[in-house]
Length: 329
Image 1 (spheres, rainbow, N blue to C red):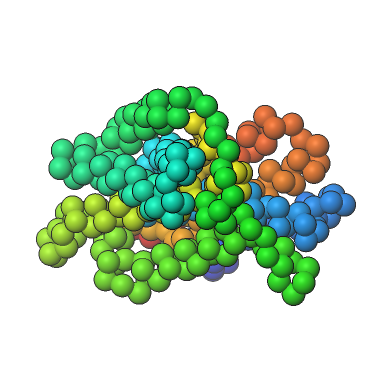
Image 2: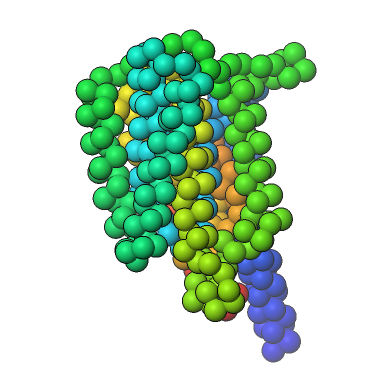
C-alpha cells in the first residue's frame, strides 16, 4: 500500500514538474534526437551540418515566434506563411521597380503588419473565430501575392534585402549568418516582453481566461490587436530573413510554412488552448523538426516517412499537453 502510494506520488511529481516546466520534455527529446543521430551517422555531428540546420530553421522559427503569440491568446494564424510570401514579393518588386531598398523593406514590413492587424480586427470587432478569419485571409493574401507578382519569381538584387544571408565567422571557424543572430535577438526581445512586462502577463491572462481577464480590467481586444500587429511585424522580419536565405521572391514558396510553424509551436509545449507556453519552447520545437529531418535524411529515410514522423510528434505533443493540463487543474 505504501509503495503504491509512493509510486503514485512519484508519478504526480514527475507530471507536476513537466506541467510547471513544459519546455523540459521537448528539450529532452531534442537532446535525445541529437545523440541518436550523431551515433547513427557519420555526417550528422559536424559544425557545417549544425550550421546548416540553424540556417534552415531560422525562417520557420521566426514565423513560429509570431504564431506563438497568437496561440498564447487561444487563437491561431493560418495566414502567416502567405503573409511572409507577400512581404518578400512587396520588398523585391519595389526594389526592382527602382525604389530605395530601405524604403522597400519598410513598406514590406508595414504590409505584413497590415495583413495581420486586419485579421486581429476581424477577430475582435466581429468576434469571428481566428481559425475562420485566418483561413480566409490565407486565400486572400495568396491570391493578392500571385496577382501582384504576375505569378513569376523575381531575383533579389544585392543590397539590404540580402543582408540577412551574409555569413560571419565566430572564432574564425563557426559560420553564422546575420539572419541567425538577428533571429536570436528577436526571440530574446519577445521573451523579455512576455515575462518582464505587464503586456506579457496580459497576453497569458487573455489566453487562459478572457472573461476573467476582462473582469480584472484588462482591455482584452486591445491586447489581442497588439498581439496580431506584433506577429505581423515578426512575419515581415521573417520575409527579410527568407530573402537572405534564398535570394528570390516566389509566390508559390512557403506553402506549408503555416503548418510547419504550428508544428514547431505545439511540439515546443505551447498549448493550443492558450495561456501556456514559451518562446524558448518554440525554439526547441523548431529545432526538433529540423534535427529530425536532417537526421532522417542522413539515414536515407524517404520524405514521406519524415512527414509521418513529424505528424506523430505533433499528436504526441498535444496528448502530452492534455495530460499535463489535467494535472494542473
